Image (cartoon, rainbow, N blue to C red; front, top):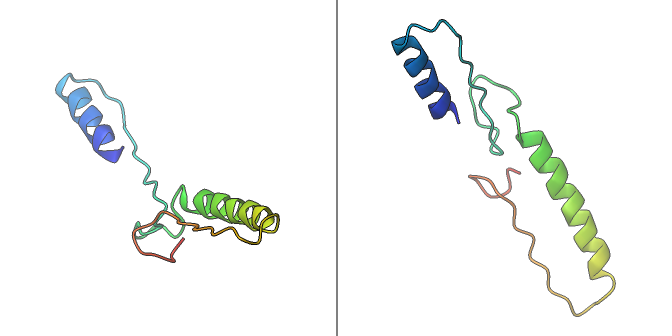
Length: 79
């Protein structure tokens, strides 16, 4: 996590070790300003679409099946 990266950078600095630590934001919510596309958002959307396609194919085998497809995300429908 970025918190861990910050802690690591602090500990290295305390010990006089000159090493730059970089944290990259990653979230399925894609809500990291000013990053236009956060790591994880595109992959999460692709995997959700592939999963839904598989579910639709499975549903055609049994017309009495009820399927609930829930996706992750801070705001429903964003993913």
